Amino acid sequence: MRPSTRDGAAASNQRMVAPTIAAAASAVLFGSGAPACKALLGAIDPRWLAGLLYLGSAAALGAALLARGRKAWGSTGLRRGDLRWLAGAIVVGGVIAPLLALWGLSRTTAASASLLLALEAPLTALWARWLFGEHLGARTIQGLALITLAAAATAAPAGGGAVDAWGCLAVTLACACWALDNNMTREVAHADATTIAAIKGLVGGLLNASLAAVTAPAPAAPLALGAALVGALAYGASLVLYIVALRGLGAARASAYFAAAPLVGALVGVAVLGEPATTRLLFAGLLVLGGVQRLAWEPHYHRHRHAAFEHFHPHVHDAHHHHAHRGGEGVEPHAHQHPHEPLEHEHAHAPDLHHRHGHE
Image 1 (cartoon, rainbow, N blue to C red):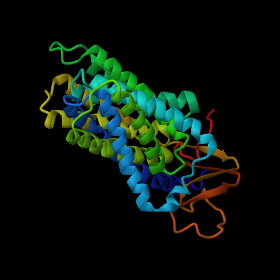
Image 2 (spheres, rainbow, N blue to C red):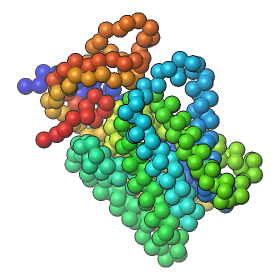
Image 3 (cartoon, helix red, strand yellow):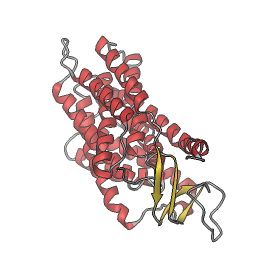
Image 4 (cartoon, one colour):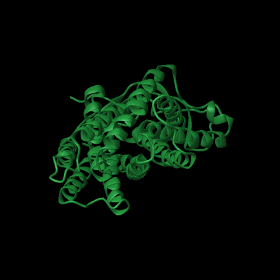
């Protein structure tokens, strides 16, 4: 008997509204960035562009942190054990992936590269399954298959030679790196999202810009400013929103909604840059759309147990947060270190911060 099925499912769905909206907004911002980068690549070396994108992200997010005041720096929620995950995410997602993606983008169209970026979703889900045992249901597997087919259709040789094999391979490898980055970031998603994104942007930007400074001529100031602005939105704001989605949905499901980003990029590439709207791109876009629909959160309901633990993250007092306060925590939602007592119950849930358990 399940006396709280309706209430539990409703509460779970309500908790996932904000992270779902965050994932969709993140996808729109990041998807729009690919055509913008394509337009800049004609005048800026890919190495400089990678550095400027992340430095622009770091500058905008750093300003946001300063505007929040000194208290924000003392309540990041980062622990010593988080540093290895954050460092790994910076290397694979903030240094290697953008270099691969921008080099690949320079060899193919923005629309083709954007749709090929859809591979990030299935690769993120596979990493989430292999590394952390996230549950993948039938709908999720169907969605992954559709998106993979879309990427294959995008990368297939074209009679007009619009798609370059090496460019497609570079974008695919970038997707694999970003997918691993997503799962590493999942492990620090409990901390302040703006702080995490700012650190990733600053370190990744400095490393890429330093590499570019000794290997390529610097771009003109107006172009550099334009690249930094694209980075602030398509990388900085997008990453903050994506971390919020990771916190509430888990890596596999957050990437499912983020899979809409390639559709946005392809549409902008065709509408703004005047790239050809080929039958193959239309077919791949429909496959991605179908994959996103299947990947959207599927009901996951079973009896599960929460072990006793402590952590830090923004929260409200719901079924998973019954704890006392010492004062000064502020109005809800608020963030502070708080304990969780052992709990066993049954309700619909996603693999969020409180539901990272194994499945038989």
